[in-house]
Image 1 (cartoon, helix red, strand yellow):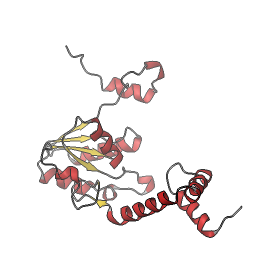
Image 2 (image 1 turned 180 degrees about the vertical axis):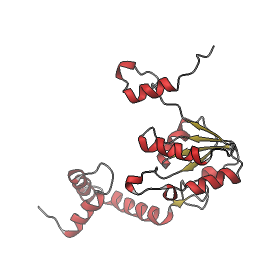
Image 3 (image 1 turned 90 degrees about the vertical axis):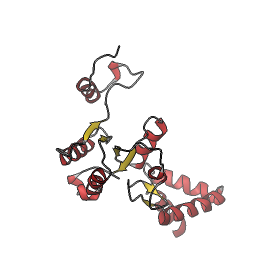
Image 4 (image 1 turned 30 degrees about the horizontal axis):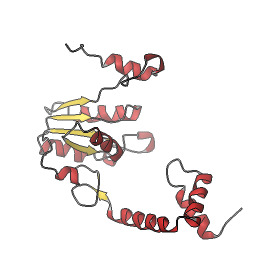
Length: 200
């Protein structure tokens, strides 16, 4: 059954969100039209403002309302250490953990030749320039432990080979509180390869 063109367009527009299929989009649209018009208008305004006003930080490529994002503006950040992540959500997760106080670089993706995504599409040259200009001594490669994430990390490390920059990788392995019997083989392999002496 087709609704009015405006309702159909609203439903189709909501389907652009990840994990939102036809039924979920219809439920969202009907809720906004039946009970949430004020919320819908606020959502429309926020979407419009964000789509036109949010850009990429000139230094780290994170989302920002200004040319340089608030994190890059912080003067108390440790210089010399840069953490490379795939997405703003990865950066947010590290920030919320509260332990890391260095700088960031957000790739906004990973290398994927099959999808036509090369080094120029994720800002590798900007990253390398920043490493050189800022005298970065350690580059933490915090890309995801997927095939594409690993390939991206190795590509960046290869490009910095001989540059005098320590490239490190986040540890992968058994989660705290996890049991070996429930851990997948890929994670176990990483855990064995990344084992280290037991501290006293």
